[in-house]
Each structure stands twice: as structure tokens, then as C-alpha cells.
Image (cartoon, rainbow over all chains, first blue to last red; front, side):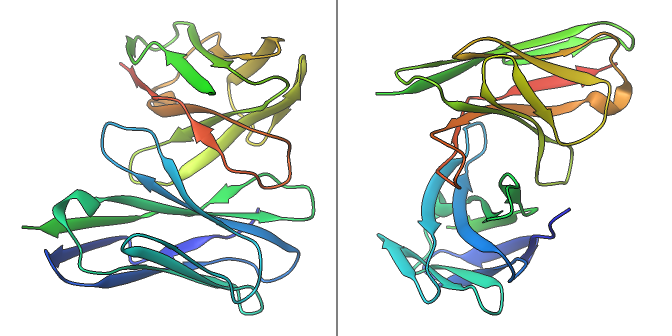
Length: 112
Length: 113
């Protein structure tokens, strides 16, 4: 069983605050790291698929970094808006034939 | 474009009753198919995946089963539901098996009473 940990479990911020959260995963046999955004009453949607150490991806105000040697990825949200409120899931895929393993998610709530 | 549908959206079933959740994918062929569950307060747990018709792999032993009778159809079943089967079930698909993006269905809420 692969251990994928996300912290914090939940986060309350004010509109306009910038925030970040962490995904930790096994550093051996790395293949890919995914970030998904899951809004209430909707399906999870992919934000980023990251495969290279040192990779940084950006989509609007959201960005993510990847460190495969130490086994962590950060997701950053700049200037949080109420519509950013969602659960953010990371998922790890190794090259040993396992399927994607999801972390427990970080639930973000942005207060207007 | 590809779409994925699963049904029913919500289901309330008594303990010991059978279950059938269905999922279909359109707009692609030979997808990898998945059933995930989110139990209360936890992340997504992979239950079953399939890389082809009739090929099912189980990640977690339980009283659930899955079948893939057609290329783009994936069914989650149980003969006798337990209270612990309550949760949110998501069907999903991806291209290939090499860590590609997972695309999720709308989800099915199952409450076992």
C-alpha cells in the first residue's frame, strides 16, 4: 500500500489570501503526480499532471511544484476567491505497475 | 469529445439487498475503467480497475464485485449490501495505464439502511 499524505486536512482563508498545501508521496519508483480539484456536488477535475523533478505548472492563480527526490508537491493559490472553495486531491503513480493512489485531500474554504 | 455517465445518482438500499451501479463511457475506445469510493471523512479509494473486456482487478477485498461486459461499460455490484458499503462511488476512465489523467463520472451516493 502506497502512502500519500496531504496536509492540512482543511483550511479556512479569507478572500484575497494566498495559500498553499502539501502532498507527500514515496520518493522511490516515481512516475507521475496528479492534482485534482473536487467541488461539492461535482466530479473531481484534473488540474495538473506532473512528471519531472523540479517541474512547475500554472493555471491562472493556481500553481504547483514537484520534488520527486524528497517526495513532495506543493499546490499554491494566489489571491484566493470564494469559487476556489473545494477539496484538492493529489494522486501518485509509480512505475511499479500500481494504479493511482489518492491522498485524503485538503478541503479549502474561502470566506468572502 | 469523451463523456462518462454513471447511474443512479442516489440510492437508498436496505442491508442485505443487492446493488448495481452502472457506468458508460462514450467517445473513446478501449479505455481503462475504474471504480472509486469515498467513505465519510476519507480520500478516494480504488476498488476495481479494468484494462479490457472481462479483465477486472480488485484492489481491496470486500463484498463488492465489478464486471465489464462491453468495452465501455463498467458495472459495480453486490449480492448483499452491508452498512459499511455506504459512501460516494465514482466511476472513472483514462487512456492507457501509465499515469494518465483520470476523468470522473458524476458519482453515486449510496446509503445502506
